[in-house]
Image (cartoon, rainbow over all chains, first blue to last red; front, side, top):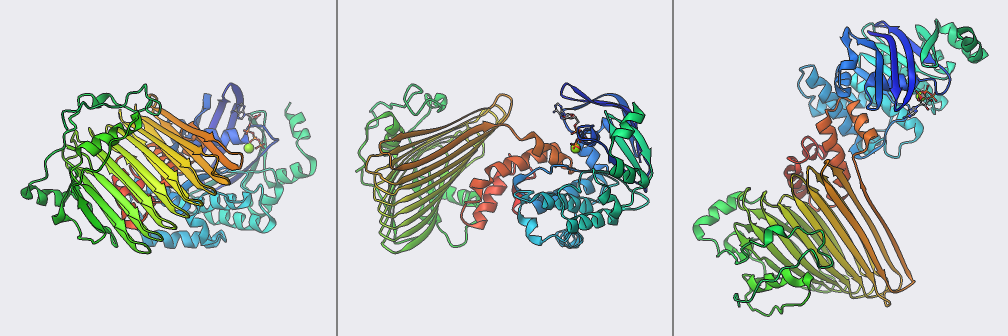
Amino acid sequence: MLVIKDLHAKVGDRKVLDGLNLEVPAGEVHAIMGPNGSGKSTLAYTLAGRPGYEVTAGSVSYQGRDLLALAPEERAQAGLFLGFQYPVEIPGVNNVYLLKAALNAARKHRGEAEVDAFEFLTLVREKMKVMQMDEAFLSRGVNEGFSGGEKKRNEILQMLVLEPSLALLDETDSGLDIDALKVVANGVNTLRSPTRAIVLVTHYQRLLDYIQPDRVHVLARGRIIRSGGPELARELEARGYDWVLNEAA
Amino acid sequence: MSAMPIVLPSNRDENWRYANLRGLARARFEPAPAPEATQLGDIAGRLPAALPGYARLVLVDGHHVAALSTALPDVNITHDVDAQEKSGADQRFANLNRRFRQGTCRIAVPAQAALALEVLCVATASSHPALDITLGDGAKLQLIERQLSARGDDSTLVNLHLAARVGEHAQFELARIGHHGAKAQALDTLELQLDVGASMKLVQVIEGALASRSTAFVEHVGREASLEWYVAALGEGTQHHDAFVHVTHAAPGARTLQCFRGIATGRSRVAFNGHMRVEAAALGTQTDQSLKCLLAGAEAEADVRPQLEIYTDAVKASHGATVGKLDADMLFYLLSRSIPPATAESLLKWAFVSDVLAKLPSPELRSQVAAALERQLPGAATRAWS
Ligand SMILES: Nc1ncnc2c1ncn2[C@@H]1O[C@H](COP(=O)(O)OP(=O)(O)OP(=O)(O)O)[C@@H](O)[C@H]1O
Ligand SMILES: [Mg+2]
């Protein structure tokens, strides 16, 4: 699904990714953990094609295609979804309108007809139920005035409506209360399938109690310095990062 | 009378610095004759769909066309030349209107009565529509004034004059939409007076026309009058849209809220100058100005100027004025949700002016305006409200 080789990337003048390698096969869920400022969000933004994130070396193959050659919206249309660490507020653009426009843009890309209004509402209502979100959120501006946790739920709602092949979820668990964490985890789990892959960026083992990862990676100093199974996350939770950093040095 | 020389304002005149007056030097101001009966069918075919609940008044090149209008007891057309020319640069276009107008459309809503009226001003050449409005005490008038070019590419010239006196506790809602042709010159002068407890809400959408200039003078004459003034201007190509609004607060407890949202695309220029004057007698006045412009073209220009002239301490005046670009984070968020760049930009522009557009009365009018904006904001306007 996703093969990253020797990725180097700059943000502004700052080199953040420094020879990162990562492979995520279809059907798997991978977790990326790592200290603050290590480059996790930079990796997510670089994969999503955010302007200002410049790849200076390396390659990224997504479903056999050169991901880096695609414009941001083409990456999304090709089934890549980024759940933002800090979802953006867009006053004046309706939440439901964004959902519909996003779905239709993706369908158009796949050569499918626009979704009809009734079908769309049925779909959105069903997904909102999964996310335990009130329908009042539909008519509000995108993330406008949403609480931190509501924004994260809204990200997952968008993901469920768009049904991406590859979801990159950047700290979707941060700022969620205990019940919301379960709701979000449940939302993510409903997306799991042999044809999709999910990459979770997280600081907490807690999320991984609800979403069992196939692999856990430690990102530090711009690369993956250690990979393992779910037990690695538990070890990090118990011992912190110093020992991994020391062993990698 | 027409032998008198035509004196136009110049960019050296205070309040006219940002106006585009270049095209006017060679303009023909003499009004077109009244339309022939044979033209009326064609004109009728170009009018927008009727708005439910609104009576209709049609002026073609400033001439009242009874055949296309609703007959109303509150509306009279007079041809008395009582309009005195006034002095000062700000009055020059108004004076041209007074000189060339083909009758004055007098709309008088009696005390406690209500009227909803759409005035369609159709231009085929030069025209000087004149509306003289009075609202009796406690009256309510919902007026929609729209400018239409008879042909889309017409180099029409419209020079409108609108005067209104809003009686005690009367309510005046005025929506103004310009559907001008690409080469049109659009000028207007508004003179409004608010009596005790009167309220006025204006919502104006400026788009189309090569150059437009709106000049408005509003006076809070009676105490505790309230004014809301919402303007959206969308410039593209080499268009030039300039608005000047002067509000005088002459009595206690006046309230003025002003909201301007401009978008300058391509090489266009968009300017808004909101002058608030608070006289010594206007104790307890509150004014609030929010003037914002979006620069969406490398060579576009925008100028928003709040001006305060205050002669009492007992006043609350707030103002904000910003000129900025499309928000890069918002843009990327939309792209990351599969939305193509052109649509994403349209959506953000739409969102930017939606504060104003949402204030338009009548859902039918809103969708007609949305359809008119679809060309400038493809994929955004008609869908955002569907
Ligand atoms: N625009 C920028 N200019 C300069 N440095 C930047 C810029 N954006 C990010 N950085 C730096 O790049 C480094 C990596 O940031 P990134 O956001 O990827 O970290 P992270 O691993 O996601 O951290 P966190 O766990 O706190 O979310 C940080 O040191 C950050 O300060
Ligand atoms: Mg981060």
